[in-house]
Amino acid sequence: MSRRIFSIAKIGLRSLIGEWPHVTIDANLHNVVPSVTALLPHLPAFWREQIATTAFRGAPDSVWPPGMPMSRHPDALSPADGPAGSDLDLLRAQTLDAWDLTVGVLNCAYAVESIRNQDGAAALAAAVNDWQIAQWLEPEPRLRASIVVPSQNPALAVAEIERVGDHPGFVQVFLPIRSAMPYGRREYHRSTRRRSSAGSR
Image 1 (tube, rainbow, N blue to C red):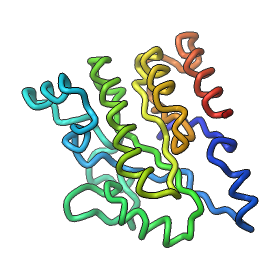
Image 2 (image 1 turned 120 degrees about the vertical axis):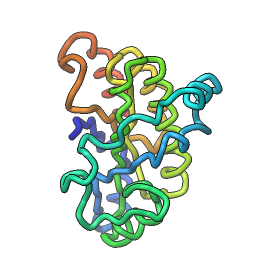
Image 3 (image 1 turned 180 degrees about the vertical axis):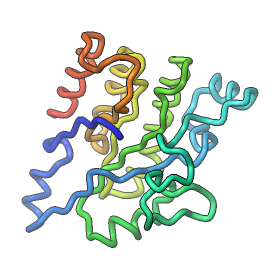
């Protein structure tokens, strides 16, 4: 479950509508980080060392316990070397091509908000976003994505939005339903304004 800030303007629908007689969008595709090792190329040396020398195995990639019916779509196929949602070719075959989608919006639920070390959470959020750019957005022009942020720290969340918010592939911010404090508190006001301004460009 997530609360998503969605921008029609930024996803580019106005230009798309002019090019195609109809536009088909799936705004709820879920891409999954296969393991924390997939993020290592996108992490600073300090955090790579922390992962290598500790028992940290990464943030949870699902709010559902493994094996529960709600943990994945019943028709979702898993690649041979990773969990369902971790393979771009399968995503193309199962959704983009199968449904002739014009645009698919990725929502990565990598739970950085569960990490107690807030600097570590911010580093992992940045790594997930860079991984999304490299592994999903750049190879597949039909995809857009949601910015993953360390929502437990509004200032760090704003910093991540400002870092990647101008990338044309990011069209919204992914926020978990469960939060350390209600999103209506004033601590989150700046991040809400930043999400709105990023989406209006």
